[in-house]
Amino acid sequence: MCGIAGIVGSSPLANREQLIRGMCESMTHRGPDDSGTFVSDEVALGQARLSIIDLPGGHQPLSNEDATVWVTFNGEIYNYKELRSELSKTHRLTTLGDTEVLVHLYEDFGINMVKRLNGMFAFGLWDARLHSLFLVRDRLGIKPLYYAMYDGRVAFASELKALLRLPFVPRDLDAEALAEYLTLGYITDPHTPFAHIRKLSCGSILEIHEGQATERRYWEVPVPESDSKASLDDLCEEIRALLEDATRLQLRADVPVGVFASGGIDSTAIMWAASRQGVSLEAFLCEFDDLKKDTPYARVAAAATGMRLTESQLSQADAGRLLPHLVWHLDEPHADPSLIPCYMIAREAAAHVKVILNGTGGDELFGGYARYAVRGAVPAKWSARSGRVISRFANSHSMARKLAAGLDFRHRYVRRMSMVLPETEARTALGLPAQGGKVERMTDALFAQAASSDPAGAMMHVDLNVYLPGDLLMLLDKMTMAVSLESRVPLLDHRLVEFAARLPGALKMQGGELKFLLRRALRKHVPDAILDRPKQGFGPPVASWMRAELGADAIQLLTHSDSRVGELMGRDRIGAWIRAGRTDISRTDAIRLWALLVLELWLRTFVDGEDLRDADVGSLAGAGGARWT
Image (tube, rainbow, N blue to C red; front, side, top):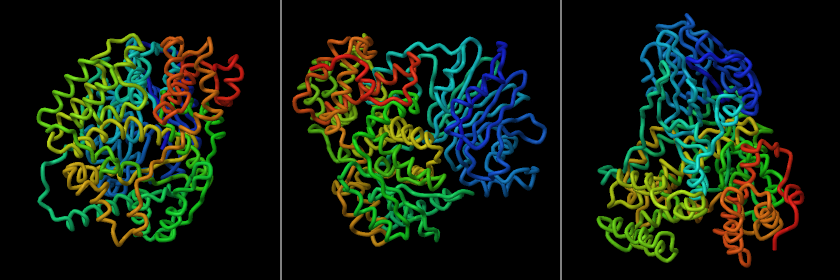
């Protein structure tokens, strides 16, 4: 696990060695153990390394025998031992790690070798003979990869802030991307908040040759099939086998490995699969204030699987104190408040282990959200069109949106996922045309891929393509890498994803029961107390936070005369949004206030260049003038 960077282009660039080192230095939290560069007349590659496998011999960038192929690699290739065994018959291997398999597989199979990799990865591979740079990102988007193409040059990095170190990368804002943020609370591939910086899409390869860039997908999430001929027992056996093997591979490391424990089905499934390999891991739990809703279940899971549980607690004061620092680590505005507990539990785990397993992906794969159980009031074959006509006719009117959502499950889904503002309202606030936004176009296209007769499966398909990589995996990567901790996700082994994603949603949620199939697969293997526990989210009590001092501080920052959000969208509009929910703030109002606060901190950090890493929200509000009432 590392921070990688590179620059290639026909235009000459002075001080490339210095620039590439500066990019890597901005990401030392991702790789504090080692660093390296490779610079030629055509390309500069760099890496900040977190040593996980082959601790003494994994220095990067790394080349093949004749130094015509170079790679800088972030991630893990879990099946590297099997690949090394195959490659050793025709190549001279000089390390004991997984990075070396990339250059030799490329020599044998070209860039399509990526299809043979089981892992999470983002890498840049330079072929000096072809004068080509290949940028590759893993199938599900577990590892991020940013790139900028401008003025005859291409630069890439694991983090956006590294690209901002380069003098030729403009900082023009992308209003369309910001509208997406104000709708979903995050920005999906390939956009970023900056018009000239992009994220490589999941499962994609970008080839740069003689200044021309060509991008193609090598993998896509399978769509749900209409039926399954296998018996329930056979399906359950296959799920257990795939989960066990994924966990077996992801336990490979030359450093201590732990596991996040929430007392839920997904994390407990990982703990069970790890125990099947005969290992006892340290498990980590983070609770909010004095709620302690997860603690009893996490203790049951740990006892049943032979894990050692470490518990920690999060308070409202932690949120205000940490948020400016975490916004710097996020790179992009990201309004999911679970970033706070994610960071806290990662920081606790990093004091004990270097690798953590977690259950991200189980809800999207097996139907863990209540929204999947809801159908529209009208048959799917014509409800989408009628719902869309009504919603467009009334534009952003709230009653029309409710009617459209009631008619069609697609609109109900989009309404629920628009956690900050309706897309039309977000676009209007930024001076964009109300209709035709990215969220509507993106979800329409994904729903069109999935069977309209399977609403649950269709919504899971959209989540696997949008919510999982855009929100959950991006947040997980940034918050764990902030403390130099490698996070692995066994439930997102691509073999398990391909198997589960093809199953009809109605089968995975038989009778409307959330995670029916996964529960059945784990019955008699995982304690009933865990399997029969109602769904619990990972989010903090953000509504109570926003009713208290943190919310007052946020309002003060956002309504002050020098508010950057106010300048961007108009202070009157911001004041109206905040006023609407202050008397008895709901969770929806609280999320909106939280999202605006994150955006304010992001603009000050990445656009204005303020260093807020050691600040807290309260002190910033205190310096901002009189409190709004």
